[in-house]
View (cartoon, rainbow, N blue to C red):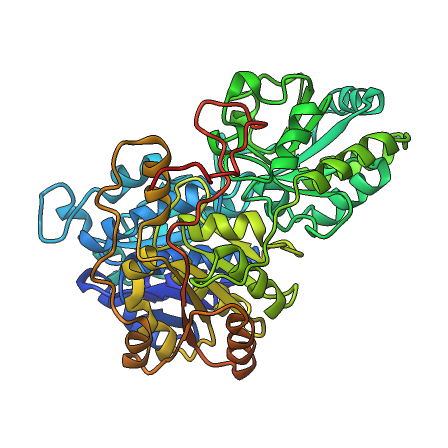
Length: 558
């Protein structure tokens, strides 16, 4: 068979049913083979949407997502999405076309050094120069992408390798990956030290990050927390690892976290960090971060241990396996005073989210979104205020149902990620929450939604500004400049031009019913939600400790 046909077979062997892609000249042999296969190809309208869709597919399903782009500008157009997946440890395989092997390095038409460009933002990369190397490249790529700390792997495909004929009997794949042996089981002595520290603590706290979701350890985490009566805070990427209605759930920490959660982190005497990398948005001031606590860090990636915060007991291992060991041996002390104290702090810092104002307050929109959806509804967000309004106020109930770009903060992520999530979970409702700025970066993907009959409901929180940048300018800079979106299109008419239903919401009480009807119809809908452009998010000012959350902006000069 041809190399392109072998590639199809290897993708199927690795469980791939769908590819998100955009064709180009050097990929024509592959598209010939793809046309004759039973793999579903979803044609996006921009390559960046392909990689974000593959990312959304991976996050919603826990399986590897696959995207495809041609050489040159096609490959460069997916780099932002690769970096997004890399920062958030999302398992994707990105297939890129490349000029023929003998032409590499000669600056021919649509040639770029894809391997060189993506090396700092990917977990690994392969470039099979001949057809006989395709088999091992694919198998290794999927293995590396999905094991240890997951991440994006690139397979750069020279045109000649796709066209060459090959006898399968001549293939002798080398499946060994030298130097790559992820540690999944924590060292027993370190686990023993952690258990002693936990048992001695009076005010322990669990901080769960995205790694706790990636390892599918939600059940073990909740069991451990319930057994030991230890409250759980999460990072942005950890939202959903425990239901945020659970009595032991404290919600999100960080720059835009919950005030009471940040206070709890400051007061705890033992911090158990599980699958989190202590990003600057979570930690704020390193010197002030949980300074009263002994710190235990459980992470499958040894490079993350102690990278930012000094750790007392490091454990390199898979979160699910490590938690299972902790459950077997940990004691069950009485921590009633600690949990009661945290409950009181939560009550004292509880925020109002019910408003009757016009224009709509963002808090009210989140309240109505929560009333309209079920715990199984998959939420994707874009980046900016829309993202943080949702992260702060929306109560996520299940893992893999809150999908957002954390580390890279990629505007334009939300809508294509929803496409991937909907393809991965066709029976579930998918709601994409975006801002008017980020939506306009990828609004052409409404064509992809329509063409593939995807019942995605898109809520545009429309404040006519680049909201997050505007907020930072208002709080910390002299001028609000270059952030007002004065020529915003009519989003209802834009949706209708793609054959998609468009709605506009401007008053309290309208959004809940509009979302309910849209989800019930199982038809794609765009909802333009006109919100108050002056409302500001709770924020920890840069450089301050997490307990210094600012929530009152009444004295702010316009």
